[in-house]
Amino acid sequence: MNKVMEEKTNKNVNQGTKKPEVKKEGIKKENANSIIEVNDLNLWYGSDQALYEVSMDVPEKQVTAIIGPSGCGKSTFLKTLNRMVEMIPIVKTSGSIKYRDQEIFSSKYKEEYLRTKVGMVFQKPNPFPKSVYDNVAYGPRIHGIKKKEVLDQIVEKSLKGAAIWDELKDRLHENAYGLSGGQQQRVCIARALAVEPDVILMDEPTSALDPISTAKVEELVQELKEKYSIIIVTHNMQQAARISDKTAFFLNGELIEFADTDDLFQNPHDKRTEDYITGRFG
Image (tube, rainbow, N blue to C red):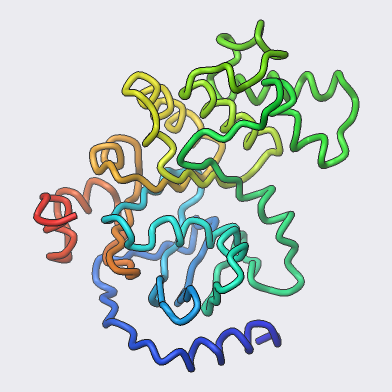
């Protein structure tokens, strides 16, 4: 264990927060085709523990949904997968997260590389105050690509990948702020695709959108999983049931159940899962 992890672990152990009993029933780990492996992950905001002993394997080129009531740790867990949560200075973690068998908490692992390969799409569309073209070309330019013909190809490919090229091909040099909310969100997805990630994290990406735009993003997610592994936090259980292959249910910082989506919704192993998906709380 490196010195950084050792200090984290020692400090975490001394927090004095009692861990809840974690049930392993209904949590399936599938190392054979996993792109991200999480083992015994704990997370604290200062002295308050937000995640407890979370262990799960994220399958490659599938859609994994994360559901649970507000404040249960869904978004915190998602942002841990590319270490964005560490932008909050009081955050401490213990445990392990491996991306393609490499420990992301290692002091030798570059955060910039991780965030290129594990991209993020946020709850509210957040385009830069630039043209559509410059939004999508931003990442490639940061990575040293300057030739216009290469950038043109990347922008077109990425907008096509986000299923919005036909809508915007004649508006590439307009400010992205002039687009509808649904179009802005798909431009943000194109911006994430432009740096060729492996994994796309989505934090309630349709919660600020109208039903038509939501349907377009859901359809896009189904297309993207042919090339990318997608992890989506959603407050909408119907959405999780429609678009995901696997679903994880979080409650009070615990991973209660993780299974094939059909199995979790039709035959939950834990009564807390059943109570949540049947509307008894949440």
